[in-house]
Image (cartoon, rainbow, N blue to C red; front, side, top):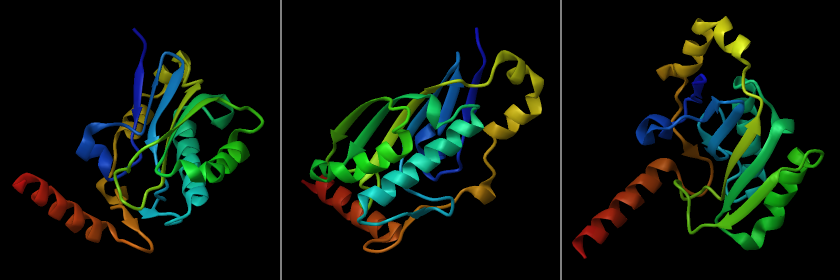
Length: 181
């Protein structure tokens, strides 16, 4: 059986939900749903679908690089948007990133995403994880990839309309309201 490498990005929801940003196995790299939060935990481009899509794709590129792949090797993307009428904004970011090597792709409108200011979430599947030689070359390096230091884990925060704290309060109120009904 082949080696499975799990790659964490340090995102807030990884330990809460129990997932890896990317998993490399059997010559494939699968990147989980990725949004427009930057390395500081700030949502890029509140209200701007294009900016969030570009940041999400940048985050995907970083995960792929850590897994031994890159955007040129992406064979499929799944794009989730909160407003399909703004598809041209996401399409522009997608084409700028994948235009020379377009993957198979699906776009789906969803009612909302995990944070109220998120407008787009993108998944990607690529070929070209580390070879068997690369996998066995450095056990320590693989262990470091799997380790997420708590100092690098940033709490997501939105810039603009609603903060994550305000959203959490709002979500808590709506949950309480639903329970009472």
